[in-house]
Every structure is written in structure tokens, then in C-alpha cells.
Length: 71
Image (spheres, rainbow, N blue to C red):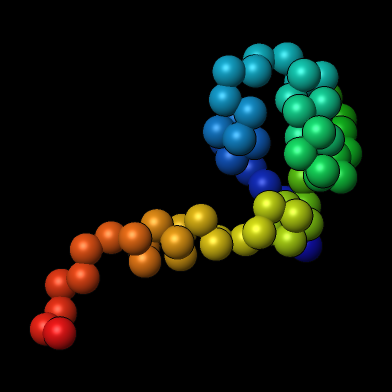
């Protein structure tokens, strides 16, 4: 099982500094959040992908870009 890194969680919780605030924000997103011994949030990567829709945002951005082929 793989978990999100601290940097990934910080990126998701951009602007939040306190660990408790990050946990509450992640829970409001519908994520199951556990605490590390140091108090930081711990989120399973598979659960995050399933809850947040995986890489669908990246796929939709790719499809919205220019088409560089011959039509």
C-alpha cells in the first residue's frame, strides 16, 4: 500500500499550515485520513485516486489541448 507523500498532501492543502486543519480539509473532501505519529495526515493513494477521480483531470486537460495531427 502506498500513501501520499507529505509534499503531495501539502500541495492539496495549499495555504493550510496546521496539521489539524489539513486533516479536517481532507476529511471534507471525503477522504479517510489517519494520523502519523508526528501528527501529520496520512492518506492512502488508492483511496485518494478513487475518491478524487484518479487522473481524469489530467486526461481532460490533454484532450482540451491543440490537435497537432493531419485531419
